[in-house]
Image 1 (tube, helix red, strand yellow):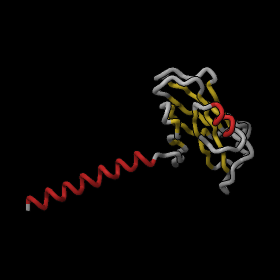
Image 2: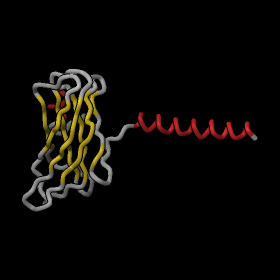
Image 3: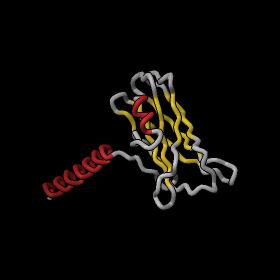
Image 4: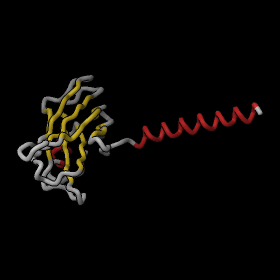
Length: 149
């Protein structure tokens, strides 16, 4: 009886650790029901988006704005955030929003970014994707229509 109970505890504990480990490896670049999520980043420099959300304008004259926070473990000479926006059909809108820190970030520094792409309540914005990079070339390629970093 004791042997079976211990085996059960071992299996339950191992399953929980495996699920936790996989969840950490898979990452989360998606937006949850509240419009919040954790973006991706440049693991080599430790530059990551720690949180972000899409603020609904609330009226026809207001703009959608993506606001978030990024941080880095190491000093970087450049930091750029790119956001792509999608309509209710899943099609990407014609342009993207950006924010950048041309002067870079110091190790341990936190950056509060804000992206205002000019979309209003009258635009059909259903979802968005946001990415960050410390590579200025990659940032400039992603701005018009390249892969989100």
